Amino acid sequence: MPKSKSNKSTTEEDLELLAKLGIDIAPEPTRQHSPRQERIIAGFEEIERFVAEKGRLPQHGEKGDIFDRLYAVRLDRLRESAECRALLEPLDSQGLLNAENDASWALEKDLTEDEIDAALLASLGVDAA
Image 1 (tube, rainbow, N blue to C red):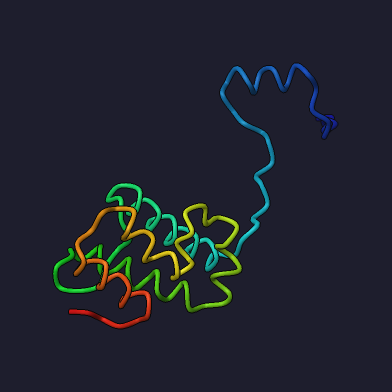
Image 2: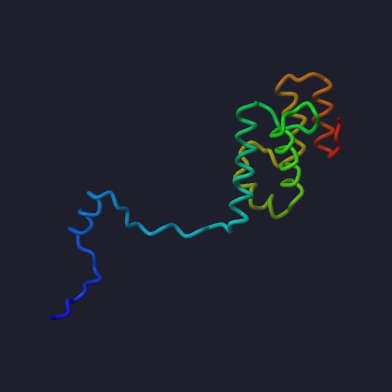
């Protein structure tokens, strides 16, 4: 039985057939971030979605739901970590990593004086509850 010669090159016909079959042969993109960095980015994106949906920053305290408090703590930790800030600052279109923006967020949203005070205390790392 004669050995068949294997040809490693891909022809135009091969590519057309693969396209018709719906098979993508493009190489997978190389990973730009480590799995840890991907988790950090995903966590930050969750906070961004929360802010977009609620129209406010996540807050500490008993009044908020579990996600409100979880995202508030997560945002604090991201702000405190130089590594996280360096990774996320190019992605931070809303200025969430800058705690100094917390008061302006509160003022823009026409909050009560108590809510503004709570936002200011939260930006300083003090739990108002």
